[in-house]
Structure formats: structure tokens, C-alpha cells
Length: 162
Image (tube, rainbow, N blue to C red; front, side, top):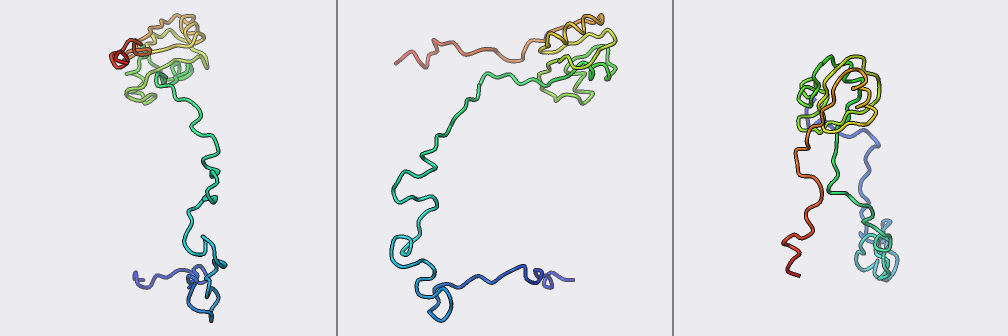
């Protein structure tokens, strides 16, 4: 079979309707546009309502809020830490195990049980996870976030000269 032998399945394609080719065929004279008026003479954009405020402008939009100061953590649960077999758990060790991404901030959550003493270093802990780790004889160490926290100062130079 060659490329010039390829053709669509029978009945899957239809010839385009040739409008405005005389009164002999269907779609002659007004070519399906009716008689007179703006839509008969030229095209009108989709959604045009004759000068009335169109629906897409009447409906409220741009709702919601994206907090620029949100901190995204990658969650790691106690059962995952228990199963990975590490005695010192840190973001680097979890990355080597393939559990978190290279630059992910890690938060330890309290799902599951931990049955051995481990040292866990992470950026955040839930209260239940911290108490479970310390209850099993392990230690919890909070790592500092790798960026400055909080909003910029309100007395910034951009707002002084107003």
C-alpha cells in the first residue's frame, strides 16, 4: 500500500455544499441567508446581540483569589517514613528514595503508625505526626524555609511618592 492509495472509509466524508451557485441547485439566490438584513449582507461575529450588552460581558468574571504568599508542601505520611527503612529522614534522603521532588518543601502528616525511633528533618509537621514520632522515641527537626516569609514591608519605596 502506498500513500496515494489511502482514502477515507466510504460514507465518512461528504462534499461541501456549494452555496450561491444559481437557482438550479439548493442554496441558490440568497444562499441560505434569508432575505435582507445585516446577517444577509455580511458576517456577524459569534455572540453579537445587536448592540445589546452580550451575555459574556453581562456575566460576572474574574472571581476568586490566588494568594501570592501561599506555601506549597509535598506531604509525606508516617506510614511512608516507616516503610522506607531510613533512620535519618530528610528531604534529600526522601528525594533519593523517589518520594519527593528535588526542591519540594516537605510536610510530615500523621497518617499511619511509626514503630521505630527515627530522626525526621522537614519544613513542617502536623501536631499528630510530631507527637507520634516523639512518642516512638524519635526526634523532630524543623528546617527553615528557603525563602523570606511574609508580605513585603508596607513602607516600600514604590508607594512613598504618591
